[in-house]
Length: 485
Image 1 (cartoon, one colour):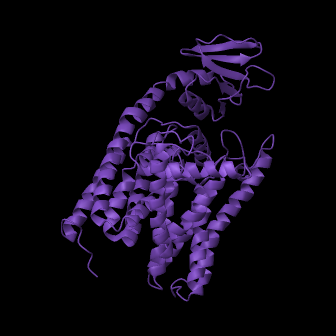
Image 2: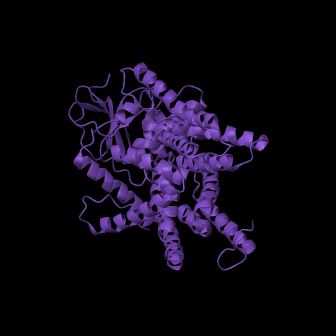
Image 3: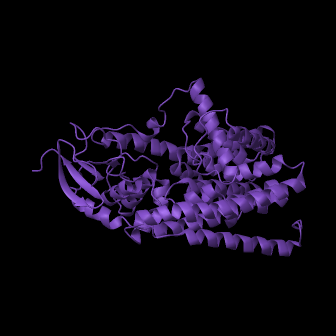
């Protein structure tokens, strides 16, 4: 069957234009690869686990045997620590490879589900400011969405492929590996094997399950993902009791705080609507979540979400795996209903873009114009956010490495450390990275019995009673609780 021509040109010219556009976007991502670290508190923990994996010394997290996050993403970036002690450029190169795979997987999925909208849907995803932000940070979102989309596409090819041969065997191995690995990147990834099993069982009940996908194979693939989560749960339980003192397991902590109630559920729903809106509406990445329902932007975001749900429902009716997995995925983040910037909904960005495209199918010319406009504005917003906000902050933080290194030299290896609120978050993160220990940002009042042994404060702050100066490296002072020995 011949491919349908792209609007405005032949199939060949359309393919060339897509390849050139993809190369341009990949080049923009490559320009963001840096030897400097765009710090976040969570990224310190991911880096700590990755460094320990690279050193073959376990999965400890800033000295704690019970990791705060599953080991999939740290394992993915751990080879970077074989290149450098500060492997931020190498991690950027790994992220660049993930973006290339994400572009392929998004286009392949969108080609099947939106046909002539595939190029625009893919471009919408690749120029999104939230994707750019998380590309620059050592966090799991990019890895999770890439592996999830690649799994969806490989499963489709496995179901539709020939019944035998080396190619099919390779796809089975690849799908099994991704099924197993995805919940180890983020535990919520278990919704993909569960959704795959559910769709396959429904197809079998209706007599539509392809002969190339017998139920035993379906169950084996699905159990790979469920088994991975089970293994991490057992490890998490064991590691939490190995810690001194024993700590709560990572998975148990995810059940806190709430038993959901009406106010919590309403807030969680508003947060998810807010996230979807901020992923679609350009220039809103840095906005804080709306404090209540009666704000004008909530009405805009709610309208966007309704359109996305309409498109999503048509994908569910077609048995799309990505759409089917999205339902329990969102349900989990309604129960785990914290405000997260755009981190929770970002992995669904390809689905959000594809669903929005399908929801506007009654106005085909208008949706091409709308998507083209959104892509242009998103690209501009992403470049502006990177160049005017993230890049200056990252460079400013990178300039403080000598100061942080000097402070770290005065600290015993396992000493507890806190920082006052006036110490920038990046300095706290860099101290945690260098020492592979937690830097507590909220240890007030200090000093007091049970508080951290050491404290970093600005030199302009008065020395509190009960503390003794250890070192001064402008603009910070290191204090010790009690009199020096």
